[in-house]
Length: 444
Image (cartoon, rainbow, N blue to C red):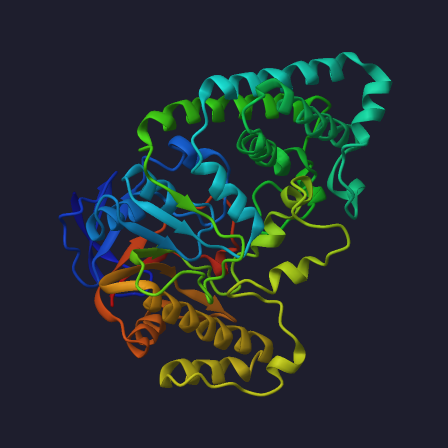
């Protein structure tokens, strides 16, 4: 560990401890400690299967899991995102439950926590490769056939070049070969793995900006997409992810289970009271990352966004969503915490809609805290990693408000500390950028 003087983004002087790699579970991190964690494992094993915005780096949940739970115990992530907590729980020989309202997040978590037989996986990949070779040699008839496997969605010509859609259609069509190639084994987990390999290249082969929280086409980027690109990147991604799976399988204890409920919601957790030994999560920021819009092209290609279904319908379910009705913010809402209500009132004078979004975020987070309290065993912890927000140029001290919400629910605050953010895969406008996350350790 390296300790240096440091002025945090809040302007408060504090010692900064730099850690490369793992935090030792024996370390009792003091209140208001500032850490800079240099991650070694962002793409390790199945963590690297797919990019995901504002993703947990593995070292933080790994520390929490090993410090606050034992082997064979049950770990909950009520806002699972890309499934980092469940992967780490699995590697530590804990059972886990991963809950998320987003179907893409649920699929990605299942794929990242399902160990596949490498020999059978090789057969599935070989069948895909043979089908794609036939497509490349098949000329116009093969290209016409590939179009039958392109899912319908709006503005196809805006998002993709026609030759890329042909190649994606060929890849999707080739998936049909897997069932026969690996019979009598169940094809579902192997097909889902290959679908995630396809999803991982979709943004790169589209016309959209590769590095933006929204799926948008920026003509000034002059993005270069060429024939054969989707096939080449899919082959490379599959090869890389198969190698990651080979490394993952022997490290994942066979007895560690992962449940990903289809009807899960952080505000209505489908678990019995007092069944979880630990909860760890990283909630979304207030209106900072629009996950359905970030992954909209991937969801089209994975058949997770039915044709004709408005994107706003999916976005409305998310905590921190910007999709609200005018009737919701017609009047000023009060939450019941003096500092929070004063800030919401200040925002209301500037922007009624965003004032309501801030208010509703804490309403939803209280519902989550109460649900986690219900399913935790007495004396066990809820570890929450959350960033503050900037709304209409006002800093919203989200972590401070959430500490008050936690105490209102009945949690005892054991400690809280800051983790400096040094890297996001997706660009966020500078005026909205969060420079640190806060780690809250709450005890029932």
